[in-house]
Image 1 (cartoon, rainbow, N blue to C red):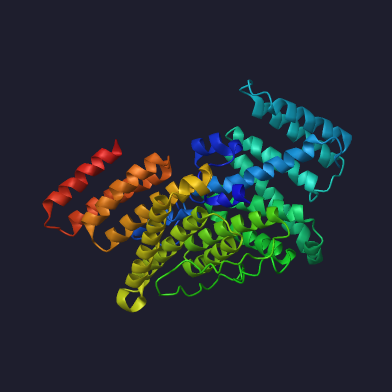
Image 2 (cartoon, one colour):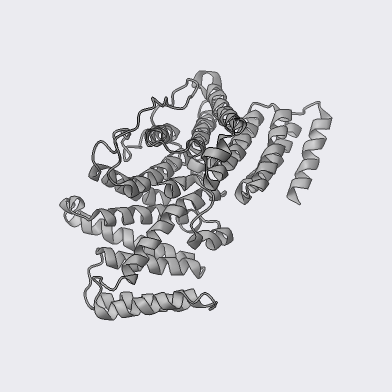
Length: 465
């Protein structure tokens, strides 16, 4: 579970590492889509709030791709074993594609492998192979991956869209099929819907909400197929998000860990997939102005992780996102209700601030106790660095919205250093944007502290370098 749950981790599977650095796809990418004209904060925080914030921060995408990478491994397993359900002609072409793909010294290996996989799916169609078989969708996923590796991202998304459209049409013909579909196939559709939603932000953003609905469908399906004891903490109706749920306007604390472990999960792999998908879905909810739903999904995930005795760094990453949900609520209320005192908007900023500060305090305690080096592995330590970078940036955003400009500038400086140290280029870019916005606000508010203004403006030029 550890490798997948770090959905919020920065390092993706090796398969997607180069592609991600080059293309920076994903729902968390920094250029997020807004449903309404945002105030400046929206650009900064929603993107920022990405880990679960899903919104636009590319690094969170990298974490989700870890899970996607695991799906790729499963697909390869189908192809590599001598015994499979492929017609002989299809299996032969797949083996040729795998052979071409493994020629690491061939710069055209992905393009060449793609031709074999495309030929295989053509033959499969000619032979009447069902498009909803696990083997057929596995082959399609392989084609989508090759398109991605070759830089043909629109073609890759088209393949993933075809998988989801075909599966949905097949279910609509007879809804009873949903309960008969193999769990591995449910898992695969769930992963494909995650990837399609991620990619659509930059390729076909108009369909992103549609992919989000499909993601909710497959999350719900997987939850219903798991034993009730496995998903006892998941009570939020994932598909019912037309109306946002209420954000509790009280200071947020991590759910209490009673020290008791939940019964052993019956299928850890499926639970990993489910937690990852729910976290991303919660991010999308926050992104699309449903911070209350996003909050409850993430809060439930934290409870589940605690029961499963997962490392604290993973939980802290989600707590950062919860702080982001409160900032998003502030943005919405700031636009819709001029009386921020009555709306609770200002209170939501205070709660967000406490979330971010609690994360930083927890990390400080963790490091002072020596537990970070003793109890956690390298990936957990990376999560600590990421959570701290994001929390510091979150504090900068909150201080800026509260017009505490000197504090905001201080936190931005620290966030920039931490983002560079943790190798978070997307966050570094967000900091540049926030820095420029801060200088604008200082100037617009006619702050008398000219030294602070001069420092902010000078810093903008430095940060642009």
